[in-house]
Image (cartoon, rainbow, N blue to C red; front, side, top):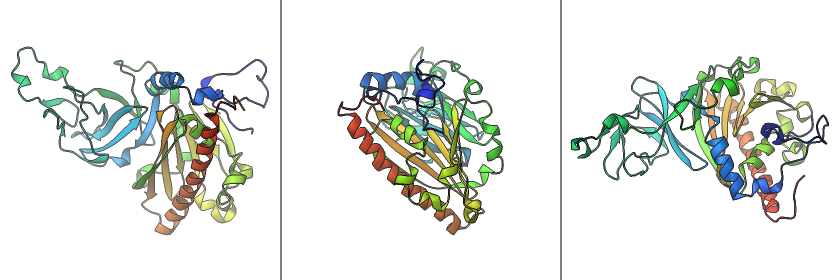
Length: 339
């Protein structure tokens, strides 16, 4: 199939290209404009459901992970009832950061600025001196809660919509993604976090998404991919809210075959019998992003089988970084308008 364009997700097409194979790329300004980025920040990252991690990352009460997406700083945490919740990482007193570590275990969430502290469920536990004040309502001053959803595969999703109920339900966007037949062969609770890593780069997040969702560049850029995937047999199928990447592996690497899925707006997953990677394209501005990777090992797999695929993917991700940086540098010149 021809390279997939982000136009598909944004619903932008023209009468001229409707029904044809050739699709024009997004205008260069959409990758560089501060105004357009702020629109995306509010309407996409502030309101859409986003796949963030897997429940196996949180094993016991108090386990937490901190994330930052498009300026939103939040934590995902398991409470004492073993329920997984998410909260904006902002103290209700003077908006200081509550959790300053990236991951770990907490017995209580304490802000070091003025000593306000919160339970693992986000409820205010202590506010020195304030609780003596007439009219102070402790129950109204818990952390700002974020909508969460855990699907049948155990993936943890969040929605930053500030409304009591998100304008768009998870089912309206992603119903059926946790019933993919190609993923039912994997018990994802058998995968344990091995390590995380990230790459920062001066590129718009959509460049990272465009790059992931086409393999037109694979033959010229990723010489090692044919050792474990057949490039000629690669296909991408667009579904509601996600893209399914279908690969075929050479016979000698059939046991390592990878199933990849891209979940809009910025989370691809790649799963094999030995390895799972949750990759996130995290915007930090119109021309800056972080590519963050959570790499999991199947507890039944050998170190050799795991390292083969994990090391191969790390090399491929480094090659993609060079491409995305080079493309973004040229988009900022104003010479190129649309491909």
